[in-house]
Image (cartoon, rainbow, N blue to C red; front, side, top):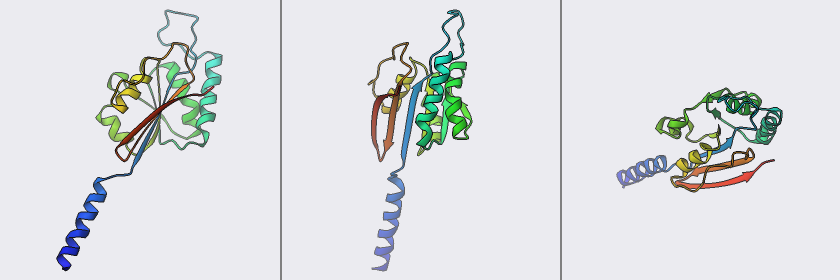
Length: 165
């Protein structure tokens, strides 16, 4: 009987360690408004409105505990991410949009709450890769207020878009 109880406890411990209730939450946004005065500039900075929006994002995330902030390696995305990262005392980590949500990124963010700053054509694609289906289309080129929230918890995936003005 003692062996049976010991085996039962062992199986229960192994089973519980395999079924994680760990929650991973991704907040995905597009960079704030960029300077459009030079159409040949492929790496513009944020304009004044964009700098203000970056601060608004920092205010939005003020009471949300973030473990990491990721951004593509462009001026406008880095400048959008920086105020939030600074408020959280985090360093903005760069990610390659051609390798978004790869195995390494998944391992590094598992069980964490993460902000990801991208572009109109990468933010919805990133969300789609996480949820495993093509649910979201590319964003309008002037949409700088959409927030994609994707949560993975206990084998379940949920996602939604909110407008944050």
